[in-house]
Amino acid sequence: QVQLVESGGGLVQAGGSLTLSCAASGRTFSNYVMAWFRQAPGKEREFVAVISWSGGSTYYADSVKGRFTISRDNGKSTVYLQMNSLKSEDTASYYCAASTSWRAGVMGAIEYAYWGQGTQVTVSS
Image 1 (cartoon, rainbow, N blue to C red):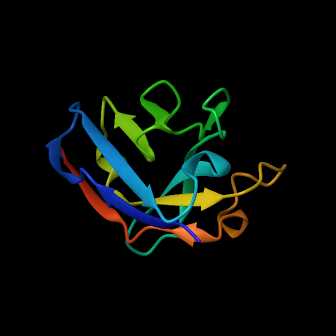
Image 2 (cartoon, rainbow, N blue to C red):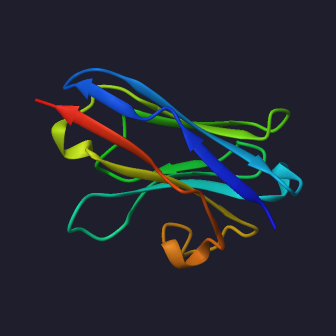
């Protein structure tokens, strides 16, 4: 199995930027589709972005499209989430997740067997 550890969260003003990182260990990183999800207090976990094994395909939630960018470095076994133009509604715990497949339900949390512990992002208005 693969172990995932997120970092890079913090407090930022609205309009600012943050880059989250998720370091993987334990298995060959390039065997996994990687995604970011987030969960705000009192809300369900929601899909943010996903990237394919080689990085050639990405997909974003409408709420972050044009502001967030997902990328990966297979040599470093790390996936990133660059977040720009942050809004107060982006405040949440952010989780990276890994799956061995890319199917029609790739935006669903149930598709991902491996999860990190999360990193908190707080956007002040």
